Length: 354
Image 1 (tube, rainbow, N blue to C red):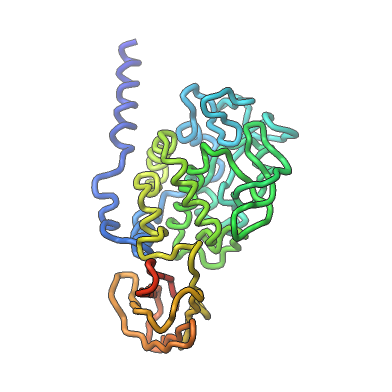
Image 2 (tube, rainbow, N blue to C red):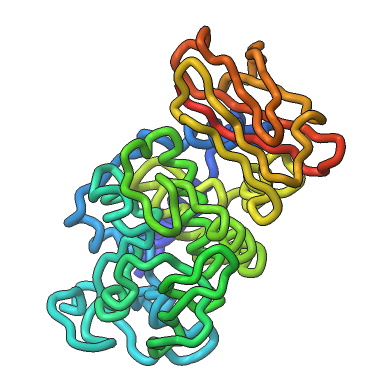
């Protein structure tokens, strides 16, 4: 008994000390906002130790285990209540075939794999892969997450399938229960940051362009993250995955990063209020920046910089509610275009590629 207690104490000490945020881990992100913060976080968490797909089921025992040692399935769990069914590790509950809820659990890509063309390392990134009931996973399919009006189907824990009621999208979506909306929002913030600048050629979907949620989805996910704050479940999962992949989800460690990047008062576009688009992008010798009608183009102060924050002089011509940039002399790279209007309280910022 004494040896067992010492072993347990060592394991608890190991996970309690070595799985925490390493000292200085986010040092290079300090003082940054907007796309510069997103890029800094990307550089911190990129190049993780990718695992094999077959190993993920085994890792769930450390990343997604409830206190009663059952599988933590967000699509069947009933927080504070009794789940309609539970799964156990190493007991034959893994799928397998299924014909209804409660038959088995499998590995769900919460950010559907078809959206990134089944490519690696996204395919095995544990931060967006969860154990879920196989039947519910199949019903969710690769539909976006969203808010459902009249449900066409409802799972036993209250997750729904139906048409979206979020402004900007009306197609079929899957809505998880409220207790896990923040978990999934922070998962999508992670994907938008971990694969920032690495999503060229991704198929995308009605919910995302590359790795970044579209404006309607980003607004919804920001709301979900606020309404469902970080839980101990997420903290424990973040620590467990760090020991496996050697990277972390910054939006669990620092929930404020989401608003620092995409919020309405941090130099980044409020997706519900304004819009900006660049054509063509990647740019060639010239590009046109089209602004929403709410912004008077002749009242703009323009800042053009590289990702190191160094300002670059680019000739600009105003044309109604658009800007024409002369980019002939720009080296290949990623740039940030910021527009500050005296008549508009939120700065616009967009990424330009060459």
